[in-house]
Image (cartoon, rainbow, N blue to C red):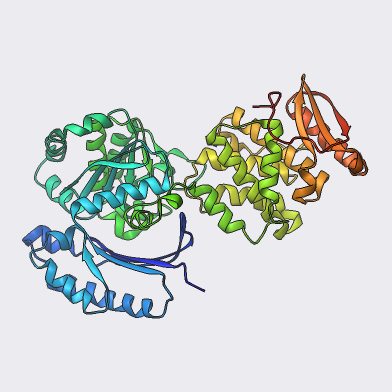
Length: 504
């Protein structure tokens, strides 16, 4: 059986990282992640050449990586070097030394690095429309993304190491430098008023600080949004904090602390110059972008949330095909959902299947936890809350006097949560009707008609009706303030496709 594991070694200015990916090709998950803090860019910033001591550390670590990879059955390996090696006078000699270790190393141009970063954001957030800012140790890539494509892009010498050097030259120098550099890029005018997607460890560390300061209800970095107006206050706050205070914050790695205020300063300057509508953290960047670029177009077009959920739940479904049948059955009542909700409904139907492998006493809590904290690419905090609300009801965790957790209300709007709870009540009803058998479920149909909930059953299935089924049918009707429901026994199998009388 061919391996689906893919590895990337990213030789950056601050660190060198080996990441082995598995999971669904469209929604890769990290199987192994190791980092060397070599600091290759320090010598380049100061003298234009790689510092021999840091280069030796890097090569020793890369030799270890090569030995590790020899023991792994990989489908692919890519080894890329970015700004530090690209700009160093002796960069090619260093790459030859890396190749001598048995690693197929290449130097990415600034253009290629920018494209890879942009593809990483598109991989994480399909439909992203704005500007990507990928900050590394040696460079800052700015990339315009729209229509699931990478458009204009540039690579600037504004990584954390160079930002520190500019800031050290005098107060206000960084802001003026950023204004000057960005002023030469006319295409940035098309990015005004659009989101700024942030890629890189420096930005993620800042997001952790912001989470702590604002009491964010869900500490998941992917798709986390920072209001642009908070950028200056965040910079001032980070500057005022000492190293120990920063180190004490959850999720802040020690290696990031030295340059966190440089990242905050650059972010504040970018916000001032670009006037974005939002600052959105991307959990994926160059490495994931390189994987995304290598996929066939058909796979790139898939929804990463659904692909990731399918992969995780593939061996936990009650009966094969039931999740898809359940989603289609729900369409008879809820109609054709808006795309933003349709993907969440199908994902919730898939996640519902995991309940059967959970301890019955914690089934609802387990489903909520999986929806909220699962490693889901392309899911915002609101998306996670919507899925969690539907699963809590579907698993019996909401209802019968049990209130919806306040956390969900903090993350998503009540209209969406109400609809999600409706999915959950319908899922509970469907389970009682079919026992999880897809063919049986699709012989029935549910719809709203004239303010009343109607369940259609073939006459030969009338024995399915019991007090529990009737109670769940009434609970679903009550959730949408519909009249007392009725059950219609029909001679022929009903059409379970969405109708004009649905709850759309």
